[in-house]
Image (cartoon, rainbow, N blue to C red; front, side, top):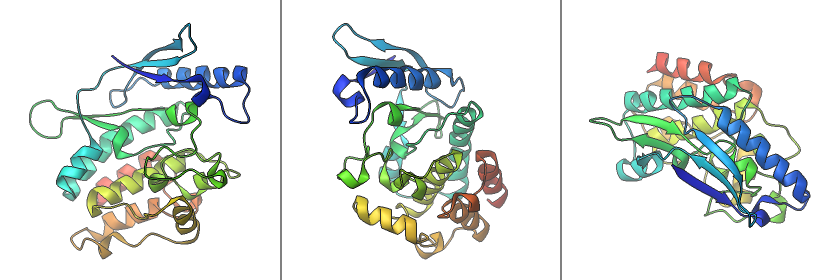
Amino acid sequence: VAVKTVRQDVLNSDDLQEGEAIARFEREAQAAASIQHPNTVSVTDFGETNDGIFYLVMEYVEGETLHRLLRREGTLPVKRAVRLLRQICDGIEAAHDLGILHRDLKPANIFLLQKGKGDGFIKVGDFGLAKIVNQTVTDFSSNATPSSRGIIGTPEFMAPEQMQPEIGVDTRADIYALGTIAYLMLGGRTPFTGDMMQLVMQKIMHKPPPLSTIRTDIPSDVERVIMRSLEIEAKDRPQTIGDFISQLEEAS
């Protein structure tokens, strides 16, 4: 197994009393533990130690992250990327079926189990962790500021509505993150880069540059599906994970 620990001071935020923070931890941990799917990292236990350390126990995944794979290989062939995305989507869809959002999908929490030749089997991890640990941003390269308080996720992969705490988020925020991951797998970079405030302004006001501007051999139908998942307004994206991946498979 792997054990992730969360200190009490990290768990608490300015607007949560200790009892509320503990209740939230238990609620999110229970939700993560309820997801039972081959393409997700299963949570088997959670609790609090005698000295106030909260912990999650989950299955240990032996392999490499999608982040490491992309760092090594740069971009992937379309059909290979879509095969990987199918497994990722199957895991996320299982969570959505239970009413659970991931909120912080990124290559660093997508794991490839090495079994024989090929890419092996994918498991998506860290469900609920972004909500349990009340960080403004989880990306080491981004500076959290008072203006970003309440924003949960990794800026490069966050939907525009996640960057506006007053706006609610739903499953379509995870679809945006999947579109960003697909864009990165095929284009070699995320649609938007910069510091937190630059990313907020770009995502709220601008559509990302088409994939074809950075890679010319992407089928136009594949590009269309990915770019649709990156629409500023959630209503303009594919409305379910199943729609997104089935359209992508059909296009490829």
